[in-house]
Length: 204
Image (cartoon, rainbow, N blue to C red; front, side, top):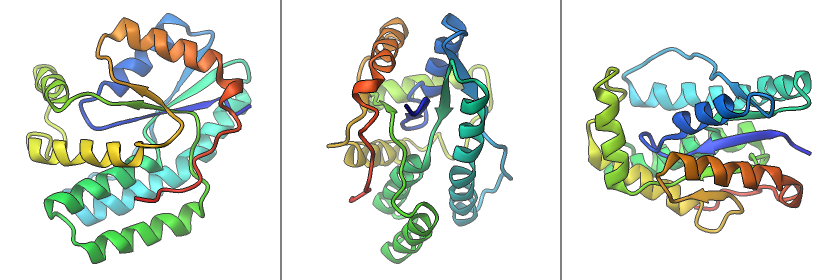
């Protein structure tokens, strides 16, 4: 059974908090994968390409971590599907055009060749909930890339919802952290029922 779990969703959705809490509460069951660091860039096109490469490389390291920790589930923050959702958001608000969207999508397809992640937890807040989370985060840390632009956030949320509208994922609508942890624990415990399901296409 694939014991790598991917947490997917817009910025401000609470993915990292949820992952950290799962590991904190049950360290014998879960281990966190720390994202590969990549160069920072304010140029949107370079940012997209760097993250495509990150999402291509990370599964190799995640698989290695899983093999080295066979009794645990590896929890990963984001995957290639997040990149696709953000591309849809960028297209919606006009930060990239259709030709550029198609070019980036072509790079993604050549890298992944239809081999997309399974075992996905889609964290799906409302726009208002995501904004509240982001504003709260600003009290403790610096602003991330363009996250003060809530039109960008809304377009990103729309992108995620399009991609996950009919996919076999755990869809978290609740904001309560205890409930999120409970739902994740239950779903992961029953993963053998889901393990044959694979995301084979990103059709949107």
